[in-house]
Length: 499
Image 1 (tube, one colour):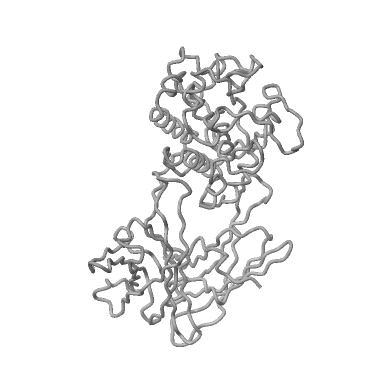
Image 2 (tube, rainbow, N blue to C red; image 1 turned 180 degrees about the horizontal axis):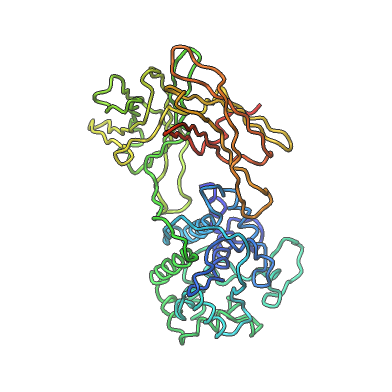
């Protein structure tokens, strides 16, 4: 949702002539366009971040896309995946949800630039056909993909003065853009229908410079059949664009295997915390994100059933309480139709006997009218919530200075800590903060015993990580011993107080 807000109205920019949705789509195509499908090299691999100084990649669309999306890179999310997601969101927003391209993760970031080869407006038709063939598209697919890509946006005179002359005016930020059609903020088939109707809007089809009329040459490459079909039917246009853009985004180098289509998790826990009190108490707290599509009513009660450390089923365990979760007034939703459900947020907190602890939980959603309920148990496995190794948020804190960041972390290890010979705090740290694609190195900090809690099996360990002030990648805590390894991974910094 945070990323999607950049293109909330497709254009998403206050700068005259700048269309953020078009920039994100152009970025993805230019990244993919140097692929050689026969050789199995290139594709959507974020190599564009190393190639923006080439004549075939003019303009600031690529740096702006990286600035918008690159901040979400992590050891789990590649820049290439973010570029694909950006294009998917752009098309979704700009089509008002009529085009939904599925997202598959797993793209691998390039370590440097790839070969040149993005098609340019001054090239002849034979060159364009050869370029798209190298990318895996035949002539009619080339026509359709260009029409899809030029449904939004336009030609910026500041980047292509030979196509769109820069006309002096009083606005220094004006990009002097001439759009491809008259509905530049809407992903529709007007780019095709207006071409067929000979409306002289598209500067790459009807511009004064005959050499750069690349759209005119491409749209007529099959005698005008494909562009006429796209002009005649909105449904055909949308279906064709959906298929071809998905292929484009899923074009990756040999050896890269994309994962399954990402589906929304209808019940998703987050910010789970186990707090061990000095008096031997154990407080369990956390949040749930729940899709409105599975709620019988907006005010349907939500119960959390904690499974004890032993793993005994709730119906036989001595203590397996149902904790009522409180619904927040905050909701989140997609910014366009047909994108997904609206999300409600629920929080819970409860004291439980420390001798029983917790290993997982299930979520029960009740219908207050019928009395019926549905249990969500993470596919029969329960939602994991082990109390074996847990950061102690109230005992931990962060200090920040101009050039450094310090994480003072305390964790609790439960159940015979003598099983563990090593407890470590691991923080992924970028080798270079100014690198367009970050390479992370794991900084491992040993954690040492700092005390026990009388009457319990808990031992506290403390470690101090000191790093550059820009590193707040989620951290891991790992405990190992002979034949045993326990990890608590991807913990956010924002739960910790700053001193």
